[in-house]
Length: 383
Image (tube, rainbow, N blue to C red; front, side, top):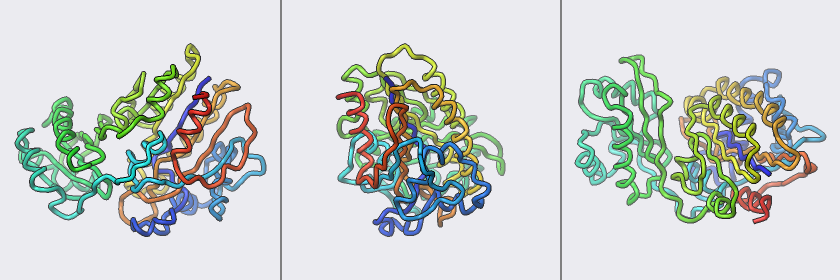
């Protein structure tokens, strides 16, 4: 008896009613990708069979190239985020049963982003001078400050529209374990400011040719209460985290945590876990980050489509490995519309596809909270 929760990172399906409060009115990640590559070039056949197009019909529009099907394989719906925010931690925590009443703190994008007190304590406790201290996209900040960093002028600190304290360092200047040490110090300092995540952003290369590596690590705040992971673990269900799930939940409630980097590695790990049927009860929670990190934030419509297509191609393999009683849930944590303004996340509905060989597909409608997933998982495991 296994449940698999797959989060296609940032795969939103339309602006939420309050999106204008976030500057995101009109955002629609899935629709604008399909329009951008033209309907005849959309290559999401398995998601279409499962009912992705049926999800968007609930919001009143047709997804070109991935239209609704008459008999979807999965139960289908869309979910609105009840918590304030549009970031990774808030979205995943709500999927796991936590609705945040107080949003994480965000900071101005212009210099200086972070308070002098925070930056002062960071410099004192880590021994590094700060470069940056403003909002930026990851590649832009490296182009601007990478040379100064290589020249020993300091470590790069930047933020975004999300609640993040990002620390970028060249692996030859700041070894990866040293960067992680610095991030652990920053995490403790950032708690007082309710900063959702401290993110290690290692990179390599030369001036004009910098590349971020796969050794990124996220340091989230501790969840404020128990999650579905804690509940399942307490009740004898083995919990397995793949990708950045362990970081998002600070490894709480997790029996096995695999910090695989990139969608291909994460999907390979999922297949490996599914091939091992030794556990009677198991919950696998997997995040597929490439859609967001590599394509959404970089506003690459074709790249985003292709990343989803690669996930889609593996879904047939995953479904083929499921036992009759297994449950597969596919969703997202927020949007990141590559056709929208800026480079940040977008406040959107997320799709909900729930597949089991033993269950007939039904219309799940528009759900008021991502937390319905946690409640349904509890019900699935009879907890």
